Length: 69
Image (cartoon, rainbow, N blue to C red; front, top):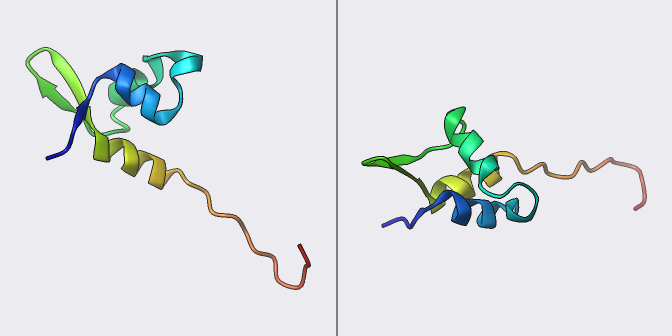
């Protein structure tokens, strides 16, 4: 079973708590850019959804052949 996170917990996991508080994960939910669960009037974000979001937006470095690092 996946842990369900509040907006504050999701922001902490994303590393955005100190700059935007719960606004960033709230915006992700409002724009339907991340999976979420509605429990009554409460919104919770599965921890796996945060990890998937990070994985989808991770940019791998480009390796240029013939160049020394």
